[in-house]
Image (cartoon, rainbow, N blue to C red):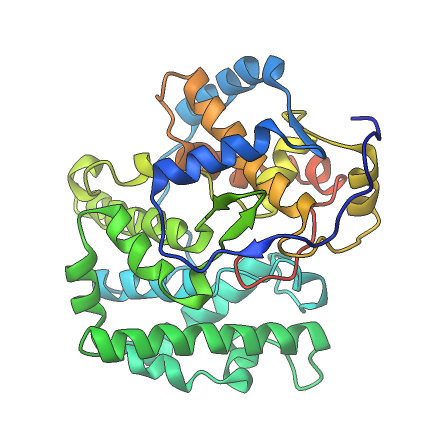
Length: 351
């Protein structure tokens, strides 16, 4: 995508602090932003063939159980609590370059493995225990030594604040009980998203050119991961997966707009970045949260995945396509292809 148009604005959006407006509003806002995007485009000509490849990939894949080591699966109740807590701190990609990673070489998996070990050592516990996970405790969970980098320390502080907010909410509004929280929010995915979106740590909303754009990445991925947990235990018990997942659960979700999925879509030619944006990303320049480039990347990612799902007649929902794309990036056979084109970096508590 050649350079043209005005210089990139690094930060200009306002924050949207209102309640979650719903999935239809989210899709509409993403589409509207993508339609007028100046820095990012979607290659509609490549969509159909690419979608067919994803469908074939899905047919060839096995329904895997939750990956050992980065999930806590000792009990169903513990696994659902783990998913909620892990997704509360499922952010920090902009800080991962300063994180000392485990052998997975993944910032997320380093965090998840440390949190799984914490659950193994301490479960069961009430949500109020999350309020005790201060920055030093989070550094320990992240596996960072006393000489942790400034980035790791800042990330640990942000994670501690996020977990404190979740712990206080569940202690004061849900009787300090994970089970009560899930019982009250079960069944309707939008209800869980709305409940989580009320917390500061989940509210990734923008006001951009008069448009309310609420990607709700962490709240949405929580719905998806809880479905994975239910399916995991259903398969262990020999039950049909359809009986374990809530009706229409993941089908309602959009893509979880972060930095990995757009990296894959750009490397595979579905997203195209204007030349100056590509150069900024390649040079490691941070795209500020709320900047034009960051918003357009997230909106175009959601819209591109919606169009891929539409090209398949909805046979693969956007959340399923998101999972395939994320797995592509972490496939050892494809790692060199995707890491050759770095993802954008944004220091945010939302992804």
